Image 1 (spheres, rainbow, N blue to C red):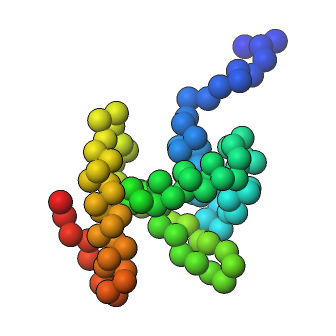
Image 2: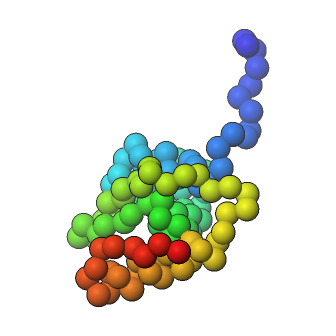
Length: 107
């Protein structure tokens, strides 16, 4: 395929590209995610929050920085992904964290 310019699109969604950034560098900054993916820093923040709320990424604060861990055991979302269930899981995690518990109740 010589002589062809690279397409201006990608097979991966912005969410998938953010996951790749986190997998490559768990200490990556939101600004760097935005630069690598080609999105704004606020968009990178929104995506990281969505991934964390759905359980795909765990954030741990280290001083002024975040350290991210990918929870690879979760299946990828499907087009009919139940966002309400993901929201309930996120609320349960927050509640458990406030109480100091680590188990997440199953829906």
